[in-house]
Image 1 (cartoon, helix red, strand yellow):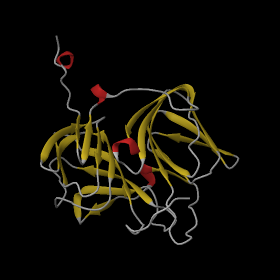
Image 2 (image 1 turned 90 degrees about the vertical axis):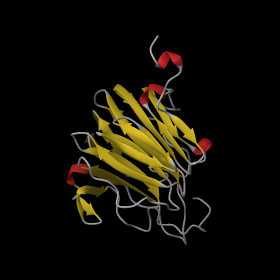
Image 3 (image 1 turned 135 degrees about the horizontal axis):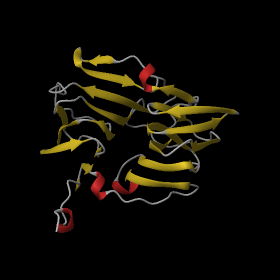
Image 4 (image 1 turned 180 degrees about the horizontal axis):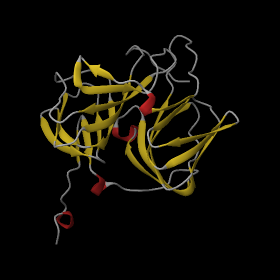
Length: 252
């Protein structure tokens, strides 16, 4: 009997963080999906202020719509999809992404077997700030910035710094041996999907080996630090809530 058969997994669920490895993923379709299924990585049921999941679509598979007042961000991990919005059809290949404000009518259909990282969050209003516009882009076209001047750690912000948007999504790429310059402790929560490579993540007082395909959730104020290991760069997609005062409440 293999170790998985003996109940072994790298997945853990702690008070202020989750580490989920693919061997523990559970698949189930979400409402409106056709020839598709979802892997819910984190949701309000776990204490998060957002939902993040992987959508696996077969050829011509389709996504459903989001609940009322919910915004959606999607990033193509693998494959290609057609996004129809505002009367136009956009083809998003690997690295393509889109931000869809609450109430945006749209459809998503796979051009071939595809995997999407999907983030959905109820929009938080701040002082009458209008909701953002539809954003469609490609990660490869976003200029990278060296984090804190470290050329071995490159960040690509996929969403603009606009007061109309209440969360951020970035990709971060580390050369082997590169690490965060400090152990971070902050009010923002994170959803993190490992896209490439491997590394060591410190979460609170624990240290975890992580690799391509893993998902991490970090609750507010969870101490966190990462270092890339191995012979190839490590890269992840990371969400954080931001651009709102901590006292700001309510939703659209």
